[in-house]
Length: 137
Image 1 (tube, rainbow, N blue to C red):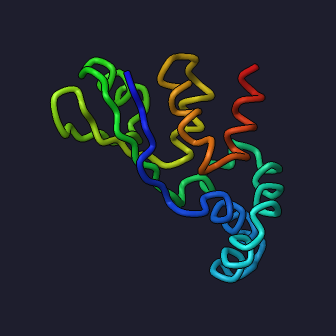
Image 2: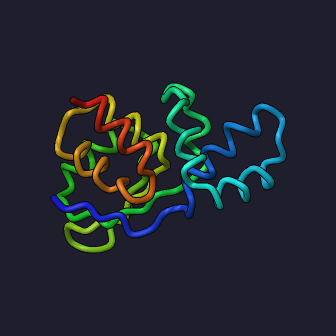
Image 3: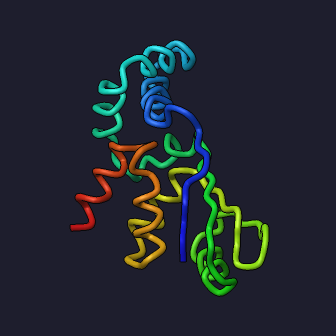
């Protein structure tokens, strides 16, 4: 099985941090623009939130190209209904989900898919990646 992230919402952690701050009354677009320019601040905000506050992790989209047989895809879809998969060729799939779905999968399952999903977010959500990696030790 191979999994490669091919697209994602830009500035995911700034978006998450803005969602956190806007629940306290700030203008969403104002908070987002400020946090895009300050990725370290966004990371510190994301670091403090508990993963069970899932809705702030839903405002994004991740897309992967996956090479796997149908059984692997079916198992994934049965384990979490928020993954979406479309066949694009024999043994090739276009998959998508949001970060909340990835977090929930990685926290619940200790399998090859969880490892691949976790590694796929290293660049686009480094704070979330680091926290999940530390929690899995």
